[in-house]
Image (tube, rainbow, N blue to C red; front, side, top):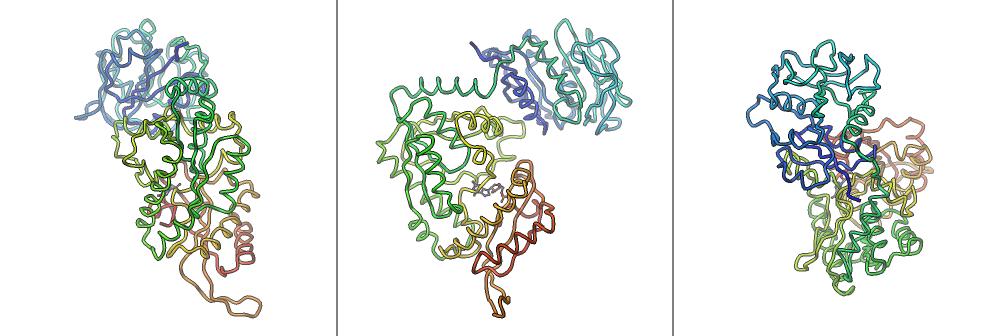
Length: 511
Ligand code: XMP
């Protein structure tokens, strides 16, 4: 059966990914495409409908993104949201009024005539607005179906051609009945609504099997969720023709290497090559204090070790990577590939000189979908909801020189933080919670003795995506308990401080 698809043309709204996620939650695969994608490209898909996203521009602005006018004649329903609505209105002969006043925030939308898109909703209903321009006069053949106090034309539709426009954002939860609007649109598109992460996983296994044929695949397990789910999907497709490599660089958290062994090799039956390379990494990092040099050294060592492991595994022709959909979208968005890419976040990169064909089984998925598939494939919840952990590991949390002794202190302090945050039920609420070890020592007194030991920092932040973050307001008694435990249990730390910096201007990690 073909996979029915809704195409979302991205005009740069901060909510575009949310539109895609809402549609997928409702059982329809949706895909984000550049705004000027040609209708011919769209026609090549099993297209059921098109959404024109919002965007920051005015349709009158020079260089404002446009779409191929043929998208309105493809015979599939089109939903224009905010900027997308104005673009549709203008292209089809209506009038768009330049921003008189901006409308931002919640508004009460009242139905002004019968509507397919708004059917089943209360009137008035609360919607979320964020716009400057608005439609003055809709194109011929369109009815005005909704209005707010400040926006006379807040919803339009041409039922015959199945073209819809709304000035507000149905994808955000402040639009209380937004889900119903999206469902009504999917009904207008006559979608079966049978897509879900599990059906994706089955489809994906079949595809991988076909692609790989009798070949073999190599995958670097980082210890994180994405590479784990990628490996499990591929394992399901090709079994032991997948070799996974896990490099213990000595910069992992307490017990992490053991847990990886137990989880992947013993419980899930993957063929994993474990490389204990901590000595080599320690030797490479000796005396290095500059954060970027630490990253480079770790990346270089990793590539060399991985390349050797690949040779030993008989040079598989395929390399699996856990690339996710948001990374892919960044390169198609109107904002361009440079707006948000975090280059330093892929430690290691690819071994040069070895020609691999890439398999990226997760490149169509959002993180929450990857997590669901991970659970289906037998990963435990604790692992699937792990907080992010940087590729260079504890090296960028051990400020100053990285030595085994200091790493051990950091590991112990970090384990206390994670343990207490989990006990308090906050582990999934906060974005990251960890310890940092400073290279300064200070004087303390313990049992009538003078001490001269290191300082540990608690770094606990809330964030939606790691791009911006704020320090988490932890209850005082919990702060006190964590600090007490660290000083009592970690011999070598006599002082604990709490990091009150947000990002920006600080970053989440200290290096
Ligand atoms: P910063 O410190 O830049 O971190 O605010 C944002 C997010 O990225 C993670 N991070 C890294 N991840 N390699 C990675 O794989 C890195 O070098 C790296 N540096 C930071 C960090 O943990 C946070 O989630």
